Image (cartoon, rainbow, N blue to C red):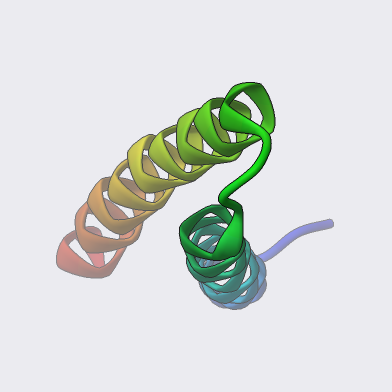
Length: 67
């Protein structure tokens, strides 16, 4: 069974991973100068990660406030 504390740990770990992926996509996109399509896709990936990290923060805040 997944306890609230363990779930919070899992979500916090997921947040860190999503945040790191977002940074990597942005940094990589900034270095691409010869492939606009790939650069755009990486920027879109980063935006998706930004949305997921925001949702994770909301979930974590709700869970922590319920404790």
